Length: 115
Figure 1 (spheres, rainbow, N blue to C red):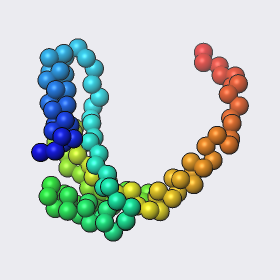
Figure 2: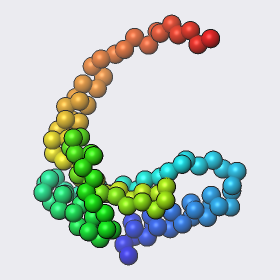
Figure 3: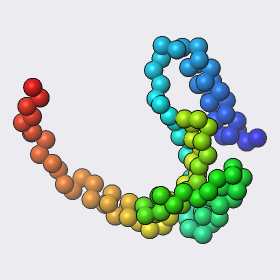
């Protein structure tokens, strides 16, 4: 087992033990662990997601397809393991949108009546 994997598993076990020992600490209703393939090639990333889907017995989630994501996941109650390939078109769209960062400055002097 590689160090990164072992560290994640140990961290999850430690978190579970901590939350069990401290029932007064609030928790969210769900948690998702993401895996993103380390490749720039759409074909290679999709191939990796396909292999993961076969290993975990899940289908490809086409709900994210319009956003340029190729994904699969498996649920353990409210805990999800999700493998996502962010395809080149989605990365390019994100980069284009980020290129405007800081160019538009909204007027933050809003007169809100919160009563």
